[in-house]
Length: 87
Image (cartoon, rainbow, N blue to C red):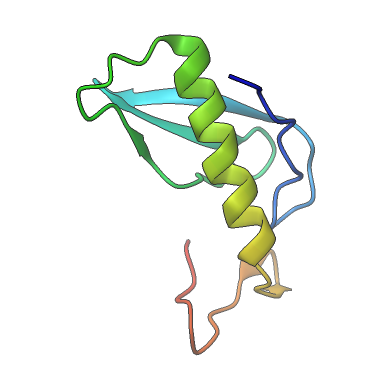
């Protein structure tokens, strides 16, 4: 599986992020600077090892980064009509 390079955080612009195992069979990409969590990736019986889980989490993070265009105001993302603010 080809592993993509993670994109910058859509909220703070940091290029520092890591994949964290949040629960058994669930991973998320997390920004190391503003601690924004990306979409969850679930095992769903695929027996993902750490490398595959990281690749899927990066893919979900990059997909999120492409669609995130919420403006930041006073250090917090501001809600838009289509997306609520995540605090």
